[in-house]
Amino acid sequence: MNTTHSRRVIGALVAGIGLLLLSSAAAWYQPFGSGAMTYQRQNLMRDHGHAMQDLARMFEGRRAFDRDEAVRLARELEQGLGDGMLRNFAPGAVVAGSRMSPATWRQPGVVRGYAAAAQQSAAQLADALESAPSSSEVEQEGVWMTSRRMGRGRWGHLRDDLVSMDAIREYSRLNATCHSCHAFYRGPRW
Ligand code: HEC
Image (tube, rainbow, N blue to C red; front, side):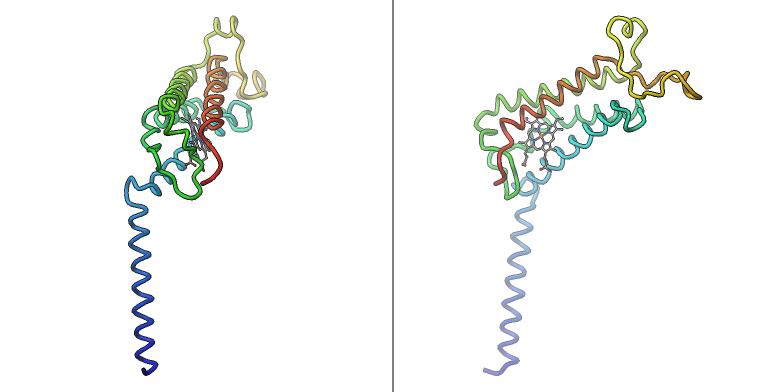
């Protein structure tokens, strides 16, 4: 056998294996395949994590409080929780690197409850953030100040950086629900 011939054979083999790998990769990432679903699930979760962090930064004065932006983040969370979120939680839809615990599909009712509770908190958080607390609310409940530069300087007259205690309560409740669901249904990596 001459070397040109064996090189051709090897070349064909390599190309064949390449094609095989490509087609199985395509099957892996087809819509609703486990790989695609895990990817979407983790991406959505990561977005939720960023939204929660951005809100915390605003509440703690590490980032300027922007009411519209805060409401947008809370509404985004609302949309990505509840039943909508569970579309990416199909039984068995895990690949290497996923941390979805098998308990997730053994106890769909409980998981659904967490997703629904989180969605409700996000909705109430968005509602509570929509307007600045009224003066009677401030009197009765107190108020959360997002910046310590209140009442002084050029922007002292702008009191739009006050957040109602309701919003802070809902934020903590939402945060606790995220963590409870993780405590039960986010296990070690597969
Ligand atoms: C109904 C249960 C449930 C709720 C509610 C929930 N999560 Fe998750 N979360 C999970 C599961 C399960 C995983 C693991 C997914 C995987 O690895 O396949 C996860 C993963 C994550 C991750 C890691 C994503 C990655 O990169 O792998 C972050 C961040 C996260 N969640 C944030 C949040 C935040 C923030 C909230 C609340 C706003 C929340 N989650 C609410 C079940 C939940």
